[in-house]
Length: 100
Image (cartoon, rainbow, N blue to C red; front, side, top):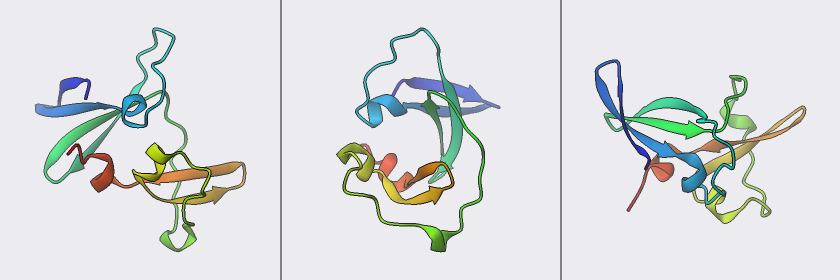
């Protein structure tokens, strides 16, 4: 966790996604972007390098994670979706925000 911020009068816990996914610390001074999610009545800001497009993904189109997906990613995803230009991993908030 990176700290807490105020989001429209509510306190949100900031989760550094690089640290959560065992990725190296960013080498530049850019702060990144935050995606705010509500999970179990708590507010979280997921700090990421960048945010791409918003896409609708039908649940029936999900595949299991490939064996080449890193262990940290496998621990927090619920599946992957194939896109025309690659794939996207679907994060499982229950597992992602389980800090036990």
